[in-house]
View 1 (cartoon, protein in one colour):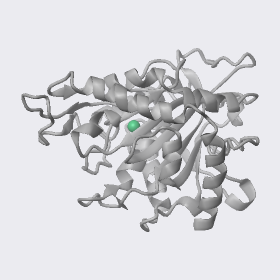
View 2: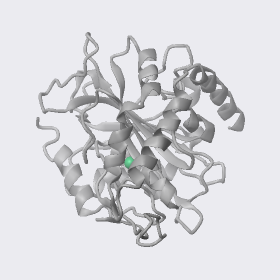
View 3: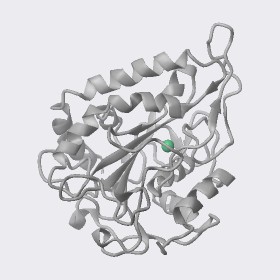
View 4: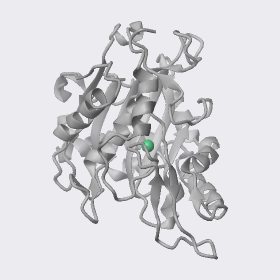
Length: 338
Ligand SMILES: [Zn+2]
């Protein structure tokens, strides 16, 4: 497995380093985050700071150029981080690619039932890559991924859509990654609606401009028409989702209980897969600051506490809140009767 990871890593790094925008993108995040950080004393909206990042996503524009000829493009990149100190607060972001609709508690695009471009499926599907499903610190996670998709499928108030695991074999199917396949050849493209790549080396996260300590990234792709415009074939005011792709940072000290000093993979996977089924972020981050505007290390929490809060603050959460449920039901209560 290590060898496989190394080979893939070398392939992708070769392609991505050639993009001159990589380091600029990372610096822009830091700079813009710092600017907004000193403006608020107590209540910090992560959504606000992420909107400021919208103009600095040239690397994703570059990646979208490499998707030329495909009928989809990267529509949103959600970067999930843990907050452990004040400087981390604004690193947590939903990053809309320029041209995407505004960041919201729902994404600006949705899967469409029976979409011919998705083989007329009424259900949603996902694949996991077993070879990438164990973290560097030994957390075996394929069953975690399955369990977290099961929560979205069966533990909401609107269990109208089946989210089925699709059979997958890396040796014969190839890597189900759109992003990691952009190495000069044809992208392999999606294999399922949700493509859970698994644990990816930290430096690959750096290549897409993710901040240090990033936990996971979720990419959402939207369908394009022949002219390269995003489609809304069912006229629901949302662009049509093509597929999603999820990575987890292999260098994080993962656990399955979120013990101090570790990060609970259950909580992070449930959050990421929430993005895959169309959630944005919800809840307001609250923290305390002294008279100089410095974070005191106290009163760091979200209100309300949701799976889809914008950052991981060290408290595992795998039970869906009222917000999590209502947002899910807005997306799926009518499924598949559009
Ligand atoms: Zn998120």
